[in-house]
Image (cartoon, rainbow, N blue to C red; front, side, top):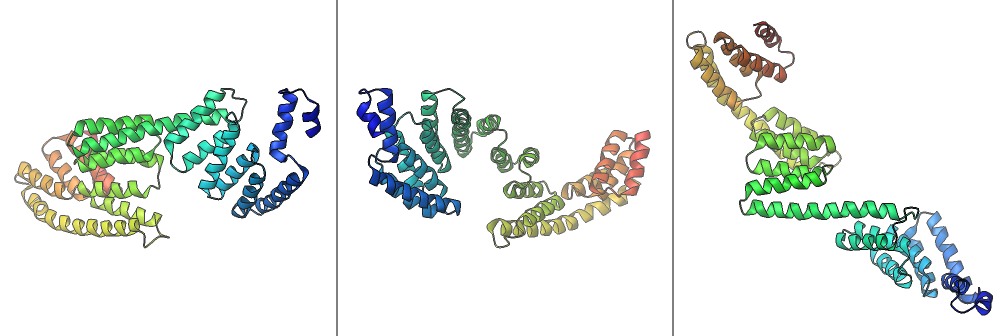
Length: 364
Protein backbone atom coordinates (compact mmCIF):
# COMPACT_ATOMS: atom_id res chain seq x y z
CA UNK A 1 0.00 0.00 0.00
CA UNK A 2 2.93 2.34 0.71
CA UNK A 3 4.34 1.58 -2.74
CA UNK A 4 0.93 2.34 -4.30
CA UNK A 5 0.91 5.71 -2.53
CA UNK A 6 4.44 6.45 -3.74
CA UNK A 7 3.65 5.62 -7.35
CA UNK A 8 0.00 6.66 -7.73
CA UNK A 9 -1.09 10.05 -8.94
CA UNK A 10 -2.13 12.49 -6.25
CA UNK A 11 -5.85 12.30 -5.33
CA UNK A 12 -6.32 9.25 -7.55
CA UNK A 13 -8.71 6.42 -6.71
CA UNK A 14 -5.77 4.06 -6.15
CA UNK A 15 -4.14 6.43 -3.66
CA UNK A 16 -7.41 6.91 -1.79
CA UNK A 17 -7.96 3.15 -1.54
CA UNK A 18 -4.42 2.53 -0.32
CA UNK A 19 -4.68 5.26 2.34
CA UNK A 20 -8.03 3.87 3.47
CA UNK A 21 -6.56 0.39 3.92
CA UNK A 22 -3.53 1.74 5.81
CA UNK A 23 -5.91 3.57 8.13
CA UNK A 24 -7.51 0.22 8.89
CA UNK A 25 -4.35 -1.90 9.39
CA UNK A 26 -1.69 0.64 10.43
CA UNK A 27 0.69 2.90 8.57
CA UNK A 28 3.80 1.01 9.71
CA UNK A 29 4.67 -2.64 10.28
CA UNK A 30 5.06 -2.39 14.08
CA UNK A 31 1.63 -0.81 14.53
CA UNK A 32 0.01 -3.29 12.15
CA UNK A 33 1.55 -6.28 13.98
CA UNK A 34 0.46 -5.02 17.40
CA UNK A 35 -3.07 -4.28 16.21
CA UNK A 36 -3.26 -7.71 14.53
CA UNK A 37 -2.17 -9.46 17.74
CA UNK A 38 -4.84 -7.62 19.73
CA UNK A 39 -7.54 -8.54 17.21
CA UNK A 40 -6.51 -12.21 17.27
CA UNK A 41 -6.72 -12.31 21.08
CA UNK A 42 -10.08 -10.47 20.98
CA UNK A 43 -11.33 -12.97 18.41
CA UNK A 44 -10.46 -15.82 20.77
CA UNK A 45 -12.60 -14.22 23.47
CA UNK A 46 -15.45 -13.84 20.99
CA UNK A 47 -15.20 -17.52 20.04
CA UNK A 48 -15.47 -18.29 23.76
CA UNK A 49 -18.62 -16.10 23.88
CA UNK A 50 -16.96 -13.58 26.20
CA UNK A 51 -17.53 -10.18 24.54
CA UNK A 52 -16.85 -8.25 27.77
CA UNK A 53 -13.23 -9.47 27.81
CA UNK A 54 -12.87 -8.72 24.09
CA UNK A 55 -13.95 -5.05 24.36
CA UNK A 56 -10.72 -3.69 26.01
CA UNK A 57 -8.62 -5.39 23.30
CA UNK A 58 -10.70 -3.92 20.49
CA UNK A 59 -10.47 -0.54 22.24
CA UNK A 60 -6.68 -0.77 22.44
CA UNK A 61 -6.50 -1.74 18.77
CA UNK A 62 -8.71 1.21 17.80
CA UNK A 63 -6.41 3.57 19.73
CA UNK A 64 -3.53 2.33 17.56
CA UNK A 65 -5.56 3.11 14.43
CA UNK A 66 -6.90 6.66 14.96
CA UNK A 67 -8.38 6.85 11.45
CA UNK A 68 -9.73 3.30 11.26
CA UNK A 69 -13.50 3.29 10.76
CA UNK A 70 -13.88 -0.49 10.50
CA UNK A 71 -12.16 -1.20 13.83
CA UNK A 72 -14.43 1.37 15.47
CA UNK A 73 -17.49 -0.19 13.88
CA UNK A 74 -16.33 -3.56 15.21
CA UNK A 75 -15.63 -2.12 18.67
CA UNK A 76 -19.04 -0.43 18.73
CA UNK A 77 -20.86 -3.62 17.75
CA UNK A 78 -19.03 -5.81 20.29
CA UNK A 79 -19.36 -3.22 23.10
CA UNK A 80 -23.12 -3.04 22.48
CA UNK A 81 -23.29 -6.83 22.65
CA UNK A 82 -21.40 -6.70 25.96
CA UNK A 83 -23.73 -4.02 27.36
CA UNK A 84 -21.09 -1.26 27.31
CA UNK A 85 -23.36 1.27 25.62
CA UNK A 86 -21.22 4.34 26.29
CA UNK A 87 -18.14 2.79 24.67
CA UNK A 88 -20.29 1.52 21.81
CA UNK A 89 -21.79 4.94 21.09
CA UNK A 90 -18.43 6.70 21.25
CA UNK A 91 -16.82 4.20 18.86
CA UNK A 92 -19.65 4.33 16.33
CA UNK A 93 -19.77 8.13 16.42
CA UNK A 94 -16.03 8.18 15.74
CA UNK A 95 -16.54 5.79 12.81
CA UNK A 96 -19.16 8.01 11.13
CA UNK A 97 -17.03 11.08 11.85
CA UNK A 98 -14.13 9.47 9.99
CA UNK A 99 -16.45 8.49 7.13
CA UNK A 100 -19.89 10.20 7.21
CA UNK A 101 -21.06 7.87 4.40
CA UNK A 102 -20.20 4.66 6.30
CA UNK A 103 -23.67 3.10 6.39
CA UNK A 104 -22.91 0.00 8.57
CA UNK A 105 -21.77 2.23 11.45
CA UNK A 106 -24.81 4.51 11.07
CA UNK A 107 -27.08 1.46 11.17
CA UNK A 108 -25.35 0.01 14.25
CA UNK A 109 -25.71 3.41 15.91
CA UNK A 110 -29.43 3.49 15.10
CA UNK A 111 -29.89 0.04 16.61
CA UNK A 112 -28.01 1.15 19.72
CA UNK A 113 -30.27 4.19 20.11
CA UNK A 114 -33.32 1.92 19.76
CA UNK A 115 -31.92 -0.47 22.36
CA UNK A 116 -31.37 2.35 24.85
CA UNK A 117 -34.79 3.96 24.24
CA UNK A 118 -33.49 7.10 22.50
CA UNK A 119 -36.20 7.25 19.87
CA UNK A 120 -35.48 10.72 18.46
CA UNK A 121 -31.77 9.92 17.92
CA UNK A 122 -32.69 6.59 16.31
CA UNK A 123 -35.12 8.27 13.92
CA UNK A 124 -32.51 10.89 12.95
CA UNK A 125 -29.91 8.16 12.36
CA UNK A 126 -32.16 6.06 10.11
CA UNK A 127 -33.14 9.18 8.17
CA UNK A 128 -29.43 9.91 7.68
CA UNK A 129 -28.94 6.41 6.23
CA UNK A 130 -31.83 6.84 3.79
CA UNK A 131 -30.50 10.24 2.77
CA UNK A 132 -27.19 8.56 1.95
CA UNK A 133 -28.77 5.82 -0.17
CA UNK A 134 -32.06 4.18 -1.12
CA UNK A 135 -30.37 1.23 -2.82
CA UNK A 136 -31.96 -1.87 -1.28
CA UNK A 137 -29.10 -4.08 -2.45
CA UNK A 138 -27.17 -2.52 0.44
CA UNK A 139 -28.00 -4.79 3.42
CA UNK A 140 -28.79 -1.99 5.87
CA UNK A 141 -31.23 -0.01 3.70
CA UNK A 142 -34.40 -2.13 3.94
CA UNK A 143 -34.14 -2.72 7.73
CA UNK A 144 -33.45 1.00 8.17
CA UNK A 145 -36.68 1.84 6.33
CA UNK A 146 -38.66 -0.66 8.38
CA UNK A 147 -37.15 0.55 11.66
CA UNK A 148 -37.78 4.20 10.74
CA UNK A 149 -41.47 3.63 9.92
CA UNK A 150 -41.94 1.63 13.13
CA UNK A 151 -40.29 4.32 15.23
CA UNK A 152 -42.31 7.10 13.61
CA UNK A 153 -45.46 5.13 14.40
CA UNK A 154 -44.25 4.57 17.96
CA UNK A 155 -43.50 8.27 18.37
CA UNK A 156 -47.02 9.17 17.22
CA UNK A 157 -48.51 6.52 19.50
CA UNK A 158 -46.55 7.88 22.48
CA UNK A 159 -47.77 11.39 21.77
CA UNK A 160 -51.39 10.26 21.47
CA UNK A 161 -51.19 8.16 24.63
CA UNK A 162 -49.73 11.07 26.56
CA UNK A 163 -52.46 13.37 25.21
CA UNK A 164 -55.18 10.82 26.08
CA UNK A 165 -53.99 10.63 29.69
CA UNK A 166 -53.97 14.43 29.84
CA UNK A 167 -57.55 14.53 28.55
CA UNK A 168 -58.58 12.03 31.23
CA UNK A 169 -56.99 14.19 33.92
CA UNK A 170 -59.08 17.21 32.86
CA UNK A 171 -62.30 15.23 32.45
CA UNK A 172 -62.47 15.27 28.65
CA UNK A 173 -63.75 11.68 28.48
CA UNK A 174 -65.02 11.58 24.88
CA UNK A 175 -61.83 13.08 23.48
CA UNK A 176 -59.71 10.78 25.64
CA UNK A 177 -61.57 7.72 24.34
CA UNK A 178 -61.13 8.85 20.73
CA UNK A 179 -57.40 9.46 21.27
CA UNK A 180 -56.83 6.05 22.89
CA UNK A 181 -58.64 4.46 19.92
CA UNK A 182 -56.51 6.41 17.42
CA UNK A 183 -53.37 5.08 19.08
CA UNK A 184 -54.64 1.50 18.59
CA UNK A 185 -55.34 2.17 14.90
CA UNK A 186 -51.69 3.12 14.40
CA UNK A 187 -50.28 -0.02 16.05
CA UNK A 188 -53.12 -2.52 16.50
CA UNK A 189 -50.65 -5.31 17.27
CA UNK A 190 -49.56 -3.63 20.54
CA UNK A 191 -51.46 -5.19 23.44
CA UNK A 192 -50.44 -2.36 25.76
CA UNK A 193 -52.50 0.11 23.71
CA UNK A 194 -55.58 -2.09 24.12
CA UNK A 195 -54.78 -2.21 27.84
CA UNK A 196 -54.77 1.60 28.00
CA UNK A 197 -58.21 1.79 26.37
CA UNK A 198 -59.62 -1.02 28.52
CA UNK A 199 -58.28 0.61 31.68
CA UNK A 200 -59.91 3.89 30.60
CA UNK A 201 -63.26 2.11 30.18
CA UNK A 202 -62.80 0.41 33.55
CA UNK A 203 -62.04 3.71 35.29
CA UNK A 204 -65.03 5.36 33.67
CA UNK A 205 -67.40 2.54 34.69
CA UNK A 206 -67.83 1.07 31.20
CA UNK A 207 -66.85 -2.41 32.27
CA UNK A 208 -68.58 -4.36 29.49
CA UNK A 209 -66.65 -2.37 26.90
CA UNK A 210 -63.48 -2.87 28.93
CA UNK A 211 -64.11 -6.62 28.91
CA UNK A 212 -64.52 -6.66 25.12
CA UNK A 213 -61.27 -4.74 24.58
CA UNK A 214 -59.32 -7.00 26.96
CA UNK A 215 -60.62 -10.16 25.28
CA UNK A 216 -59.35 -8.78 21.96
CA UNK A 217 -55.98 -7.87 23.48
CA UNK A 218 -55.58 -11.37 24.94
CA UNK A 219 -55.66 -12.76 21.40
CA UNK A 220 -52.51 -10.72 20.80
CA UNK A 221 -50.81 -11.46 24.13
CA UNK A 222 -52.51 -14.44 25.83
CA UNK A 223 -50.12 -14.59 28.80
CA UNK A 224 -50.22 -10.90 29.71
CA UNK A 225 -50.41 -10.74 33.50
CA UNK A 226 -51.42 -7.08 33.48
CA UNK A 227 -54.32 -7.70 31.08
CA UNK A 228 -55.60 -10.65 33.11
CA UNK A 229 -55.41 -8.75 36.40
CA UNK A 230 -57.36 -5.90 34.80
CA UNK A 231 -59.87 -8.43 33.40
CA UNK A 232 -60.33 -9.93 36.87
CA UNK A 233 -61.12 -6.47 38.24
CA UNK A 234 -63.53 -5.79 35.39
CA UNK A 235 -65.34 -9.08 36.07
CA UNK A 236 -65.59 -8.23 39.76
CA UNK A 237 -67.11 -4.82 39.01
CA UNK A 238 -69.77 -6.61 36.95
CA UNK A 239 -70.29 -9.05 39.87
CA UNK A 240 -68.96 -11.96 37.82
CA UNK A 241 -67.13 -13.26 40.87
CA UNK A 242 -66.44 -16.78 39.58
CA UNK A 243 -64.88 -15.40 36.39
CA UNK A 244 -62.91 -12.93 38.48
CA UNK A 245 -61.55 -15.72 40.68
CA UNK A 246 -60.63 -17.76 37.59
CA UNK A 247 -58.77 -14.78 36.08
CA UNK A 248 -56.79 -14.23 39.28
CA UNK A 249 -55.94 -17.95 39.44
CA UNK A 250 -54.69 -17.74 35.83
CA UNK A 251 -52.37 -14.87 36.77
CA UNK A 252 -51.02 -16.82 39.74
CA UNK A 253 -50.40 -19.86 37.51
CA UNK A 254 -48.44 -17.66 35.07
CA UNK A 255 -46.35 -16.44 38.03
CA UNK A 256 -45.92 -19.77 39.80
CA UNK A 257 -42.14 -19.32 39.80
CA UNK A 258 -42.44 -15.81 41.29
CA UNK A 259 -44.66 -16.28 44.37
CA UNK A 260 -43.22 -13.19 46.08
CA UNK A 261 -43.65 -10.85 43.12
CA UNK A 262 -45.95 -7.85 43.41
CA UNK A 263 -48.25 -9.11 40.64
CA UNK A 264 -48.60 -12.53 42.30
CA UNK A 265 -49.46 -10.90 45.63
CA UNK A 266 -51.90 -8.56 43.89
CA UNK A 267 -53.61 -11.53 42.20
CA UNK A 268 -53.82 -13.46 45.48
CA UNK A 269 -55.30 -10.45 47.27
CA UNK A 270 -57.82 -9.94 44.43
CA UNK A 271 -58.79 -13.60 44.55
CA UNK A 272 -59.57 -13.37 48.29
CA UNK A 273 -61.62 -10.20 47.75
CA UNK A 274 -63.64 -11.79 44.94
CA UNK A 275 -64.24 -14.95 47.00
CA UNK A 276 -65.50 -12.88 49.95
CA UNK A 277 -67.77 -10.85 47.69
CA UNK A 278 -69.11 -14.06 46.14
CA UNK A 279 -70.09 -15.38 49.58
CA UNK A 280 -71.69 -12.07 50.47
CA UNK A 281 -73.62 -11.86 47.18
CA UNK A 282 -74.84 -15.45 47.58
CA UNK A 283 -76.22 -14.63 51.01
CA UNK A 284 -77.85 -11.40 49.76
CA UNK A 285 -79.45 -13.14 46.77
CA UNK A 286 -80.98 -15.90 48.89
CA UNK A 287 -83.87 -13.86 50.33
CA UNK A 288 -85.25 -12.43 47.04
CA UNK A 289 -84.77 -15.84 45.40
CA UNK A 290 -86.84 -17.61 48.05
CA UNK A 291 -89.49 -14.88 47.88
CA UNK A 292 -89.61 -15.31 44.11
CA UNK A 293 -90.22 -19.03 44.52
CA UNK A 294 -93.08 -18.33 46.94
CA UNK A 295 -94.76 -15.90 44.55
CA UNK A 296 -94.18 -17.85 41.34
CA UNK A 297 -97.48 -19.76 41.22
CA UNK A 298 -99.61 -16.82 42.43
CA UNK A 299 -97.98 -13.67 41.04
CA UNK A 300 -95.56 -14.45 38.15
CA UNK A 301 -94.86 -10.74 37.59
CA UNK A 302 -93.93 -10.19 41.23
CA UNK A 303 -91.95 -13.43 41.24
CA UNK A 304 -90.01 -12.24 38.19
CA UNK A 305 -89.08 -8.97 39.92
CA UNK A 306 -87.65 -10.91 42.88
CA UNK A 307 -85.71 -13.28 40.64
CA UNK A 308 -84.32 -10.34 38.64
CA UNK A 309 -83.26 -8.63 41.87
CA UNK A 310 -81.46 -11.79 42.99
CA UNK A 311 -79.85 -12.20 39.55
CA UNK A 312 -78.56 -8.62 39.64
CA UNK A 313 -76.73 -9.55 42.85
CA UNK A 314 -75.45 -12.85 41.43
CA UNK A 315 -75.56 -12.64 37.61
CA UNK A 316 -73.45 -15.78 37.10
CA UNK A 317 -75.98 -18.05 38.82
CA UNK A 318 -77.42 -20.64 36.38
CA UNK A 319 -80.18 -21.43 38.88
CA UNK A 320 -81.40 -17.83 38.90
CA UNK A 321 -81.23 -17.64 35.10
CA UNK A 322 -83.28 -20.85 34.90
CA UNK A 323 -85.83 -19.48 37.40
CA UNK A 324 -86.23 -16.27 35.38
CA UNK A 325 -86.66 -18.33 32.20
CA UNK A 326 -89.35 -20.42 33.87
CA UNK A 327 -91.36 -17.32 34.82
CA UNK A 328 -91.01 -15.89 31.30
CA UNK A 329 -92.36 -19.22 29.97
CA UNK A 330 -95.38 -18.89 32.30
CA UNK A 331 -95.96 -15.38 31.00
CA UNK A 332 -95.71 -16.47 27.34
CA UNK A 333 -92.47 -14.51 26.78
CA UNK A 334 -90.76 -17.32 24.89
CA UNK A 335 -87.98 -15.20 23.38
CA UNK A 336 -86.93 -13.93 26.80
CA UNK A 337 -87.24 -17.43 28.26
CA UNK A 338 -85.03 -18.80 25.48
CA UNK A 339 -82.27 -16.28 26.30
CA UNK A 340 -82.42 -17.04 30.03
CA UNK A 341 -82.25 -20.81 29.56
CA UNK A 342 -79.24 -20.32 27.26
CA UNK A 343 -77.62 -18.18 29.97
CA UNK A 344 -78.25 -20.95 32.51
CA UNK A 345 -76.54 -23.49 30.24
CA UNK A 346 -73.58 -21.17 29.68
CA UNK A 347 -73.17 -21.04 33.44
CA UNK A 348 -73.50 -24.81 33.83
CA UNK A 349 -73.24 -26.90 30.66
CA UNK A 350 -74.45 -29.95 32.57
CA UNK A 351 -77.69 -28.30 33.71
CA UNK A 352 -80.04 -30.97 32.26
CA UNK A 353 -83.29 -29.30 33.30
CA UNK A 354 -82.24 -26.06 31.59
CA UNK A 355 -81.38 -27.98 28.39
CA UNK A 356 -84.83 -29.57 28.42
CA UNK A 357 -86.56 -26.24 29.08
CA UNK A 358 -84.55 -24.62 26.27
CA UNK A 359 -85.63 -27.34 23.84
CA UNK A 360 -89.28 -26.95 24.77
CA UNK A 361 -89.27 -23.16 24.47
CA UNK A 362 -87.36 -23.41 21.18
CA UNK A 363 -90.24 -25.49 19.79
CA UNK A 364 -92.70 -22.82 20.90
